Image (cartoon, rainbow, N blue to C red):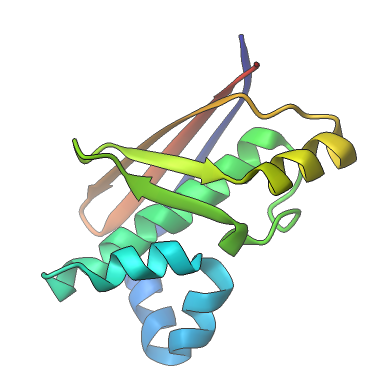
Length: 131
């Protein structure tokens, strides 16, 4: 059974602006060290802002799907990765899952994620299924 749906859209130029003006401060506040390591491996550096915009949108869509507020969990405690196939997936560690369960009485089950980019925009949709 679906317990939550969240959608977020991000302007890629906004992410470029944040990168140019806040650099590491922005990156470390929003992205996990594992995500930043993966981003560092991207060969085509022009795609970095688009990739980060997708990750950012996914994190906000995830928080919206929980109905708990956008700043309830630090964004750098939520990670977005890609499967071998290229499909994105969202990783929430057990400590954060326990915090959400204890604080909001929400048991995070399966997290389904889709990210798409078009015409300078990135959109992410998250659907959470109950355990």
